Each structure stands twice: as C-alpha cells, then as structure tokens.
Amino acid sequence: MRATLMYGAADVRVQDLPDPAVQEPTDAVVSVLRAVVCGSDLWPYGSMPPAEQGRPMGHEFLGIVEDLGSEVSGLKAGDLVVASFLWQDNTCNFCRKGLQTSCRHGGRYGFGGVGGGQAEAIRVPQAQGTLVKLPVAEDAALLPSLLTVSDVLATGHHCAVKAGIGPGTSVTVIGDGAVGLSAVLAARRLGAEQIVLIGSHKARTDLGQEFGATEVVSERGTGAAERVRELTGGDGTGTVLDCVGTTEVLQTAFGAVGDGGVISRAGVPQYSEGPIGMDMLMRNITLTGGVTPARAYMDELLPDILDGTIEPGRVFDRTVDLEEVPDGYRAMASRESLKVLIRP
Ligand SMILES: [Zn+2]
Image (cartoon, rainbow, N blue to C red; front, top):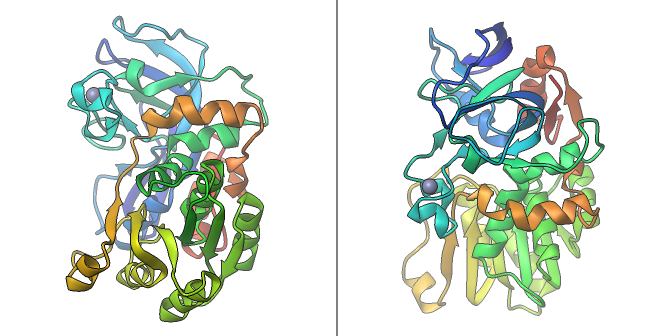
C-alpha cells in the first residue's frame, strides 16, 4: 500500500509499505476513504530533526472495515467507520468517565508499530472501542463533516465544554484556524449568545461568522483584548477559548476574560510559564482545557451532522489524493490552505 511518512522538517514522502494485517485479536484493518492533515502535524513538519526511519503520519480517518480480530464485536467487514484520533478500549475506568485520552490500553497512531491514517489502509488497535459505525454510504457528501468528530470538531467542542459554555454565555474565541472555527460552531451549538472571534484572515473569519460568531476582532495582542472589552461594556466575556497556544494569546485571553471567568485551552501550549500569579487569583479566573477525548463526544455530535444541523466539514478548503499529500502539508504550513482533506 501507499502511505505517508515524515523524515524531518518539511520532508514528507509517500511510499510503499507492507499492507497492514490484524496482529492482535482486538485489531481491525480499515481501508481509508478520507483522512486529514492536522494542524498538529505541522509541528513536526516545522521542527522534526532528520531521521533515517520515517514516522507514519495521520490520525484522523474514516474508511471501510476490511478485516477484524476474533475479539472485536459489533463490527463487520464492509462497515463504514470513523476513528477517534487516539485509540482506546472505551471500557476502562478512565474511558467510563469520559476521559478516553487517558485510557489504560490506548495509544497514538504512528507510534509503537501502529501506522498512520494518511495511507491507503491502517491497522486499528482496540477496534471495538475506537471505531464508530456511520449509517451512510461511502460516497456520501457528509463524509468530510463526519470525519471532523475524529479530532477537530471534538477539540473545539471539548474546549467549549470545559469552559462551561451553555445558553446565554458570552465567549471570545481566539484563533481563526480550523480548531478556532470549530470552537465557534461548538459554542453556538451549546447555546452561547455572544461569540467574539479574534482572527485576521478574512475568508476564515467570514466562515466563523457563518458558524455563529456575532463579532469579529481583527486586532492582535493587547489591542484585541481592548476591543473585546469595548464590545462587552468594559467587562470582557465570561469565557475565552484559546485555540492557538502561544504566550501572547494566553495574555490576550487574560485581557479579554471577565472577572470570575473561565479561560479554556485547546491550542497546544508552546510555553511552560504564564501569567498565573496574583492577578489571576484576585480576579478569580479559572484556567482549564485539555486534549479532547474525541470518542466521548461522538454519540452526541454525529446526529447533528447526520441531520444537517451543523456542517463542520466546511473547514476543509482543499482536497488532495495520497500522492499530493506533501503538497497538502506545504499548503497548510504556508496558511494557503485552512485544512486539507485527503482522498486516497
Ligand atoms: Zn480505556
């Protein structure tokens, strides 16, 4: 089969690899119909030291079940399934409380002998806890939106849930990337009333407004926080969703959030220190967020996609085939493309 491997910064290659096969009784082999280049794939794309052995890439995919281990029940060959971006048993004590990212038997694609989703096929460990059957045909126009439950929509949703967003909430979403726009969609879906989107890329903030943003702020840094305060009678919004992950954005978040408010982080922090001292204490700010347990949210999010209530797949603005994946990385890294869909 053909599969995507990363050998170092800006060095992504599509190569022949052996076809995956069931190795454990809990495995499935899935032929990939759609996959994604994730914003998080861009970190190694920007900084990975050169390696002799390529790293298999891709952790968001949907496809057709080809083969199943003897202990997998509830699935059969030919089923169309979507995977969460981490695999898990979905039965251990962490999974049962909705924290599948901490699964005792879980792991990451692309590591420990497990391949990646940017390929023609993949072996999925813990298939029963990881793969969710989709009640649509394999040529359905809904596939891009359905695929977003694997990671990007689930990430925006989790960020909004951790912030406690519900009917009437005011929120500032920082970041006009795919996660930020998904967070806008999720906040609206959960009932947020005022949604201020901070972003400077017009085509993206336009989509953010279609997803539910009530105001757009194109300033950066302290100017952005000041603008949010102007829009909220000086108080700031009750919640802020940080969908970027830099120190500057965390400072903007503290400037935009109201006293007693919540800052929730989805962006992977590129820092290890922040403004969490006396000011945060005196203002009663809560700092929360974390990696999304995508599997926990699929049963809630999939019905709204299937009935057309939300269309999160609109974040994809470019589709490539497998041989074009290296160009997809380049396009996302240069911000020429918001999010790249792969059609092997
Ligand atoms: Zn588990």
